[in-house]
Each structure stands twice: as C-alpha cells, then as structure tokens.
Length: 202
Length: 202
DNA sequence: GCACATGATTGAACGGTGTTCAATTATTTT
DNA sequence: AAAATAATTGAACACCGTTCAATCATGTGC
Image 1: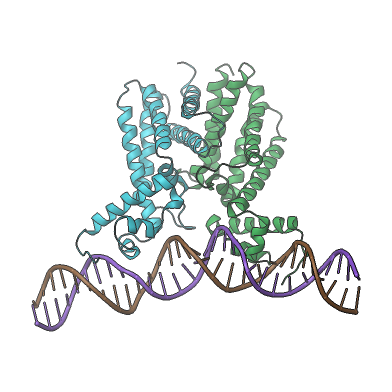
Image 2: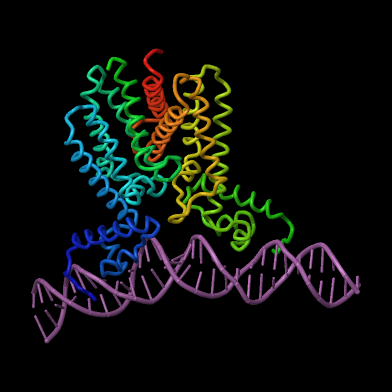
C-alpha cells in the first residue's frame, strides 16, 4: 500500500467516479458506498475523502457527468434531422432512450437530494440549464410568432412533461407495455402540445 | 415498559405511521429511522418489526396514505367546478398545491424504490391506477370524438406532464419564481396539450 | 389464590453505513 | 543522512436496518 504518487488527485477522482458509475449502473444507487468505491480503485475510504468533500459531492460529480453524456447524445442524434419539428421530437426520444439504457444513472440525477436547505452549486445548475436551452433552441424555429418568454415557458412545460413520462415509466407506474409505448406517449405529449402551442394552422 | 395490550397491533400500526409521517414532513425521508419512529410512539425497534415486515413496508403504507389524501383533495376541489375544462385543469392545480404543501411526503411516493426486481403489491398499484382513472374520467367529456384508448393515452401523457413539472419544481431545477409560476406552467402544459388533442375547434 | 402457559415487548447483537483524524509511511528537500 | 512534507491508512464514532433469545405482564385452568 501507500502508493504515493501512483496517481494524481485528478486521476484518483476520475478513477473513483468511473468505479462509482459502474457500481450504480449495475447495483443501483443504494448499492454504492464509500468503502465499495474505495476498494474498487485500490484505495481506502480516507483517500476518497481527500478527493471529495463527502458522498453528496461525489454523487453531484457523477450526475454532472451523466448530464454531460445526455447532452452530447441529444446533440448528436439531433444532427440527423434537418426538419425543425423532427429535431424537437428527436430530443424527447433521445431523452427517453438514454433513461431506458441507463436507468440507475439517470434516476440518480433526479432522486438525489442535498441536505435540507442546501442547493446544488452553480456549475451543476448550469448543466441543467443547458438542457433546457437545447429545448428552447429547438423550439424557436417552430414558434416564430411567439415571444422569448413564451418560448421559455413552453420549453419548460415540454421538457417537464417528457421528464415526467420518463420518471413514471421507469418507476413502473405507467401501465404501459414497453419502451415503444413510452416513445408513443412522448410523441403524443410533444406533438399535441406543439399543435396547441404553435397554433392550429399547421 | 412491557405495556402489553395497551394498544392493539392495528393501533400500533396507526401510531407508527402517524409518527413516521410527522418525521418525514419535518425532516425529510432521510430523517426517518426505525429507532426514531419506535421512540416516538414509546416502543422499541422490535415492536415495529412485529407490525411491519421492514422499513420498505412501512414506507409503502405511508405512501398509500399520501395517495389517498391526494385523491381525496383532488376529488374535493374538483367538486367546486362544473365546467369540464375547469374540472380537468383543477386536477392539475390541486396536484401541484398538494406537492407544494407536503413536499417531503409527496416526494417519498416517487422517490422510494423497492429492492431490485421487486415491485409494489397490487393494493398499492391500485391507488396509483385510481389517480390516472380520475384524470381519464375528467378528460372524457372533453374528448367525445376520441376512442377509449386515445383518452387513456392522453390522460397518461397529461398526468405524466404535470407530474414532471412538479418534480422539477420541487427539486428546484425549474428556474421559476414561486408556486404561481408553477401553476402557470401547469396551466400552459394542460391547456396547450388539450387544444392540440381535442382539436382546433374550440 | 396460584401456577402455568401465552404472547407482547425488549434490547443486545450483527454487519453494515458516512465521516474523521491521529498515526504511519513514502517521497522530496535540505 | 536527516528533516520536512505530503499521501495514505485504518481504527474509531455514532448511526443504520434487522433479528431473535430472553424477559415480563397478562389470561387461563385448577
């Protein structure tokens, strides 16, 4: 032991995050513990606390990475469409697909609660804001006749909606058969909302 | 101690649930523990496990009561309206208001996860189904031209949407000022969706 | 009125958790 | 080679959920 300088702090941080993500992916959030993560990277608990403030901090970093991946995926898959409507719908589908593929990691983003009163740091809030911004940007070309505020609200409503479907689907509280019907539901929510929002003339 | 027959099992169950709800309301889900609940009702841990299988079982019962209260509130507040559209919108507003008043108890319903693979018992799933049924029933008079299946899907989409707004609002991930704006958002989601769903002719 | 059986209740025990920090060990500097 | 420095450990603390042998109050039969 005592492998001083085998890894830099940043390396240890990276290793810990990767190990924790692996545990969460396979065993769920409850399956992760400081000792388990430490053991997985060949260190002991103490080292983990040298690199993260506490487990909440570690989870926040995991969630940030999850949001990054999700954002990348959505951007990437959106690139395949040029039609504005298709681009917006694709965002919803990408979101659902990501949640379906990585349920535990995705869940953690919205399940994790900081201690009472404490709120996520700015760098984290920005990652969330970026998701909403993506929706807004995709909505804009479809709603030229609407104000920026209206678009902002519509994006929030739309995204919350897709998110809600995702949550209920993953927690098995939607009595729907499979992912396909979840995609149908998402499509229904988005297209009907847009029909109502943009106007009847399309 | 050893207050045999001071309370029946059912009474202990009721006391424990009430005590646990109180703790959760004030300290959040993480603040609750078997020992705390037991102490609050003047018994010890062992007794709690005589009356509940485990903490998951206790939480399931708490959540069932939360769903009951929510359902009652929604029914009650809906009774104040006769216009079908107003009745449906009221459901959403009641939901948001309940979540805002009892955030911790409401959160627990959707945060709580049973151990991997295990799913909630039928008596619990029925309580969730009852919520969706309420939405369906309120949606029906507004969509006479739609099939039962379409109404079912629309109710699911609508409700998931409102639920998503609720979640994001409570976890402070929606950058909205207060409850009023959440209500606005809910209104936007529901009315635009309905406009798109029912058709443009209204 | 008394012993016995019954079943409600306890609380210590087990293996886990997050978190801290004095002690140890390896490296760097002098 | 000695001293200073920094990385790493792992025992300790106070909690957690859960179990279960031991205890104690009660109801029953004599």
